Image (cartoon, rainbow, N blue to C red):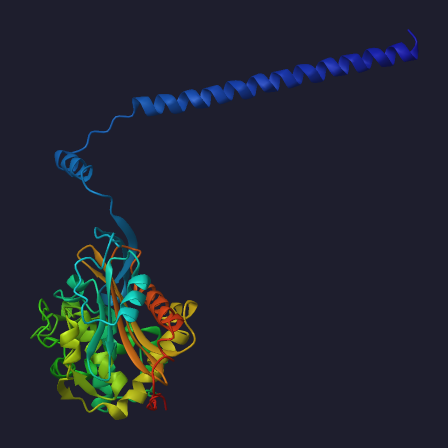
Length: 409
C-alpha cells in the first residue's frame, strides 16, 4: 500500500471515530435532559402538602382580599441585640381622587391646584398655611387632614428640640454623647437621629416634655371652628419603660397621635417668629372677605428659631429631605421628615416652609400606605408643590416684598 493510500485510510478512520464520539455525547446529553425533565415533572405531580385547618382558613380568606406588601424591619431589644422580622402593610398608598368631597370656596385656587398636582393619586393630604395669619390656603383630602391623626414619627423632633433649647439643656452646637460618639442638634435634625433625641427626652423627663408638647399645640384643636377637626392624642402618662419610655416618645412620637393641622400650626409659629395662630379655613368667598386672624398664644421661641433652623435647612440640603431638591431649588426651604408605621399602615410626614423674600408658606404633607410611603417621598412631593407655585410666579407675584427675618446664626 502506498503512503498516500495509507494516509487516506488513517484520516478516514479518524473522522469515523470522531463522528462516533460526537454521536455518543449527543445521545448522552439528550438522555440526561430527558431524565431531568422527567424528574421535575414527577416531583411536581407527586407533591402533596396537607395544611392545618387554621392555615387553610387564612388561605381561603386571603383569596378574597388584596395582597399586602412587606418589608424587613429591625428591632432593638434589651442588651442592644438586633432582631429582624417582616412587617406587613395592609393599607394602600394610592387613591383614585384624594380631593373628592373637599370644600374649597375660600381657598387660594393657585395654591390648591399646585397641591392637587403635587399629591397626584397618593393616599395623603396637603395642608398649605399662610404663617402670617393662620389662614389655610389649601387643604387637599380634608377627610384625612381633619382625622384623629397618626403617630408623628420623627416630626416630633422639632418640638423636642425647642423644648431642650428652652430649658437650656443644649444649644444647636452642643455635642451630645451617644455612647462612644457625639452629635449636635444641627446634624441630628438634618439626619433625623433617634439616639440624639432619645437622650434629650431622658434629660428633659416626661413632665417637661408633656408641658412643651401641649404648649406647642399637641392634644388640642389647632383650628378655629373647623367642622370635623379632631384632637389627636397626647398621653397623660409616660410610655412604659419596656416600650422605650420618654425616649421613644421624643425620637419618633410613639404613643402620640398628631394631626396635620397641629403640626402645621407649630411650623407656622416657627416661620413667623413665635405666634401660634388658630388655623382658619374659610369655606366661602364671604368668609374669606371677613377673615380676621386669631391668636391662640405667643410662644417665647424667637431666640430659638435660628437654633433649629440650621438643622431644618440641613434636612433639605443634605439630610433626610434632600429629595425635595430634585424638584425645587429656587427658594430656601426648611423642613423635617418623619417615617414610621403602626398596625399595618406606614406613615410619611414632611412639614416645611419656603423662606422667600416675598413671604413664607407652610406646607404639611402626610401620607398613609405601604412601602411606597415614607418621609423622603413626602419631601419629594413638597418639592413638586413649591415648583408648581414657582411656575405660577407665586413667590415673586406678591405686590410688596417683605423683610425676611434672620433664621440662621
